[in-house]
Length: 193
Image: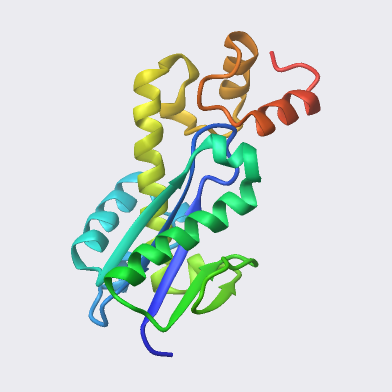
């Protein structure tokens, strides 16, 4: 298969904040026992693994697509664009032979590419990308919490929890809400309180 680059995203489901994608090439001697599907790991485990990935990966990159881009092009396209951009950054540092993307859709890239459903639980390079995407997006949402603490981003990271929906209902959307998501959620939910 040659040199493999894995890519994955985090943040497709939230009502607020960016969607974040990462791409990673791992060395043959990488300790893959540190890796798992990022959703199954604790925050501490993800942070520790992310540090080692950044130190030991052959190449890695992270890309954020803002809530404004998501509202303009839709979440699927924004996710695929972020994956493609991260892969382009990695390829410019270290060319690879194939890009393996988590999920059932693959980004439009000029290299061989395969989409792998549940790749974030099976393919080390995709697991590593999943961990970097999740930790980097969480870091952004913690910065957003510091700026708009009344929305509780520290707790829910922008996902559609009762706490988040209640804050939107009382305060109105924050500056980082995905309006195409928030309006839909409000339309589908007769009472948010």
